[in-house]
Amino acid sequence: MYKLVLAEDEEDVREGVIGQIDWERYGFEIVEQAENGREAADAIDRLLPDVVVTDIQMPFMNGLQLAEWIRSHHPNTKIIILTGYDEFEYAQKAIKLQIDEYILKPFSSQELIEVLLKVRATIEAEIAEKENVFVLSEHYRKSLPVLREQFLSSLISRRLRTDEIAEKSTEYGIKLTGRWFQASVISVDYIRPERESAGGATGGQISLRDTGEKNLQLFAVLNIAEEICSKHGFGRVFIHRDEVVLLTIHEEGQETDITGKTFELLEEIRQNVQRFLKLTVTAGSGTVCSSPALLFISFGDALQALDYRLILGNNRVIWIEDVESRSSTLLTYDELTQQSLIRTIKLGTVQELKEVVEELFAGLDAEQVSTQDYQIFLLEIFTSILRVAKESGSEAAKYIGSGISSLTAINKFNSMAEAKQWIIAVCSGLMDTIALERQSSYKLLIDEAKEYIRSHYVESDISIGKVCQHLHISTGYFSSIFKKEMKMTFVSYLLQIRLEAAKELLRSTELKAFEIAEKIGFADPNYFSFCFRKKYGQSPKEYKNSSRGG
Image 1 (tube, rainbow, N blue to C red):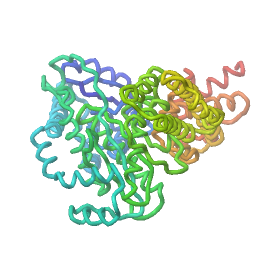
Image 2: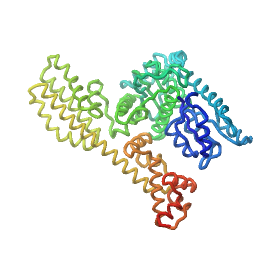
Image 3: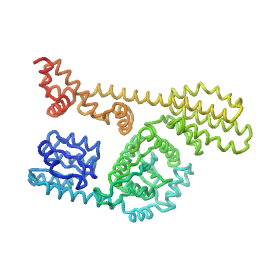
Image 4: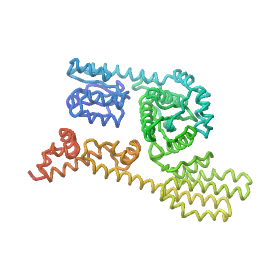
């Protein structure tokens, strides 16, 4: 089914459009109805519909303004305009905004069905082009020669000599000069197998999502990422160990410049993959470094950021500096088992911890090792634990600091079983401390955001971007944390604060509704009245009278 948002201010027209068409039969699902352009924009941001059907005349934001906003924020969304005006100036502006279809009022249900089928055919043609296995395979083979891919993979896998990087980048035609460098990883999210009906919007065709072919899905994601990088003239993508890797380079400016552009690029890739391939991806973004020789550190951090989807959820962009402190650059361990231990302490369960510790000691059970080698082995494990504690915050560092004296226990263990139990006990306590610290940091972050919103809600231009700039975090991370902690979006909370302030002013002052609207940050007093009535079931004037017994 293709998702559709219907924006029309007249309720009888909305009901007529909805009731006269068997939407499911034609492959569409109406996921939201909006009474005005602003409501429609909010719904489009939340639901990412394939098609928007909108009237041209609506309050607060008309159909053409909405279309302009859609083209700016969701350029692949199809737009159908409903209008009673056929003047040339409207048609001319619609053409400029690349409106997909328009229908003149009054119209019949059959006319709307025909337009919907045309739009559906366009969507399916775009999807078919993206999913064409032959085209994907050929494009992959031609655009990523084996030698170039091997070089890029080695660049993020280990430290290369500066002269080797310069020589090979010149030989392969890869530009690696700049002031700032950053590595990111794009991973296709796991799809739970399920039986789906053979019919539906695509007429029984099997989508790339349904094939379960990991390599083809990767090539498809790569193809979309390459197109977007090419469009913006920024970033280079390639496949490394069943993931799509994005390398971004910025030649000037500050570190924040490269991270901002990188996050925008990753978000656009994520949205396009979801729209065209019906797949979801999660991206992890690493630290910014000042040399291509240090990209392997950024890549290691990107992989660690990707692990946080276990906590934050998938289908999002995660920056390592949002979830972990990176005050100093720490090298990632090469040994897979050590990486596994670190990941488990940060994000895993006690059961997973026990399994990892068993795996750590499995080799020692099978081999004869000297006492010295065994003690070094235990010291290496405890060093990993200390590193996790240092990275995870002050409370975790305090916890593990108090246990450093336990290092003397290494010489007193009577068996490997005792050593394993000691490690599990230390790590379990650290895991609890990290979890509490993380929850506490979430609360502090949200409290600071709420305080900022309460202090600035009167400003009509307050936005999630301004709040995040104040908090020094990315908008994607803040949105997920805010919604998780507050059980509502930033926009909903801001509206709630403003309307509560409006109620207080209505009860305690003689201000008119339009004056109150201005005082609480509404640029449009009519929109304030609309929101107030929608939330409380009465107009501001009616509320004022009822609250005073009048």
